[in-house]
Length: 362
Length: 86
Image 1 (tube, rainbow over the protein chains, first blue to last red):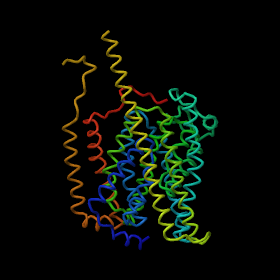
Image 2 (cartoon, helix red, strand yellow; image 1 turned 120 degrees about the vertical axis):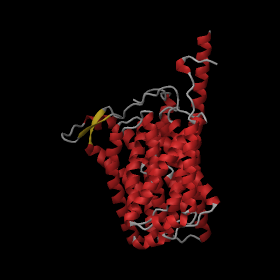
Image 3 (spheres, chains in turn blue, purple; image 1 turned 180 degrees about the vertical axis):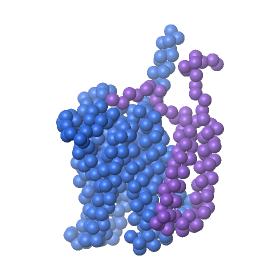
Image 4 (cartoon, helix red, strand yellow; image 1 turned 135 degrees about the vertical axis):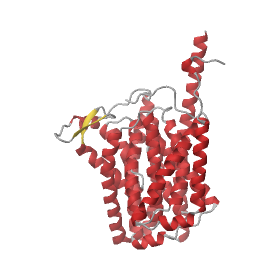
């Protein structure tokens, strides 16, 4: 790590184009995070690396923009009554343990199999988790839409009802988002998995939010808002860890933060206009598209490890560029859905206000 | 135009937006103008680790307030229908 810290002292030169690029990616990432509680990081880290930032510095700088962003987002959404602070802190602390274990596991894989092995592990984790969780979330959102029940209160899943029915003395904690007591023996593994995923693919929320919804029984809006508290706890711990090794490029972190704070405020406001199932739609869509993006990279790493026929430089370059472009598309589409849903919500509200004014005059 | 008390439009926080906006611009100007010096001190590791953490909190307070007021001044505000999260 010490050598890496020395390497980190060679931070990249920033020009105006780089600054604008990072600011804009930060804005879109923030917009999505403000809405679904996470996301953005999977684009930000490769975006920084595409400018020549070393991998670990990109991860560290991303982490250092994440916790202040999550703090601002959590405070904003707490004003709308969407945050369960207790659940966020309880899950956040176990997520921190997951981050440390995940990072340790990553280091061991890197030592044993090199960069290609480590990248393959990350990509396979991406593909497997996003395939299972992403398709499940999207399917659920589609079912809600088709059944026409999107206006109704969300139903607690059978699994969550079972989890809430289990009483283990000495471990029960009341969470306001669940209107129920749940044993921390259930929240700890969920937090740990969230942290491990955050350490592996940089977006713990892809497990954190769905698990709060489907396993614990939290409403989508509260789960996505509470994820911001978890992201703050994880991000702060991670940033301190990386800063101790001198890996944070404060300029990159603050420029991305500059854009993302504009975005996160807007994303948080957006949640007050949409139906809760839209959280699942945006999250599911992003997860499934990113799945394809990372899936494209699997042959590249398999070829680097000699497990399949060696790919030509041109093919590798094309796969890398396509993969990055799909990721940007995923984030852009997520942001578009958020903005469109917000716009429609605002228009509907204005129309309703005008109608009520006409009625009251009449 | 007179409004009933409850429908009175809220005064927009223009002053606060400008104040936090100016402080935010100053912070970013210092960050970019002194980047060489900051890179050296902030990347020392060890006890210097508190420097990026404190900086991140300071930026989030100032720039967070600015961006919040910015959207309010532009009229982008949360839904007036009180959303009850159940």
